[in-house]
Length: 67
Image (cartoon, rainbow, N blue to C red; front, side, top):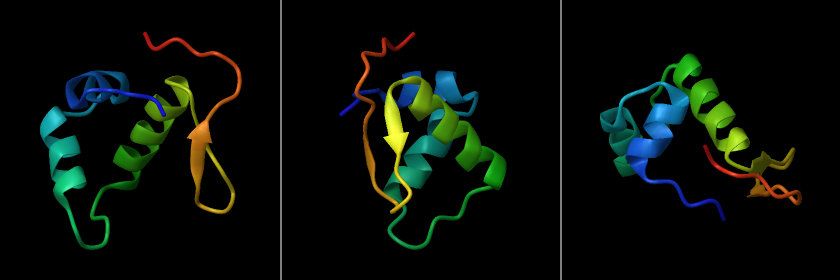
C-alpha cells in the first residue's frame, strides 16, 4: 500500500497533521467535514490509492510517484 507519514499526507491534502491524527485515533463514526474527507481522498488518489465501489481500496496498478 502507499506509505505516507501524517505530515506528508497533511501537506498533500492541505489540512493539518493534527486533523489526521484525530481522525486516525477516532474509534467511533467518522466526524469530519465533507471538504476534509474529499481533500484526503484526492491526496490519497494522487499518491496512488484507488477507491473501489464496494468501499474497498487498493494501490493503483500503474506506477505513481508521490510528490
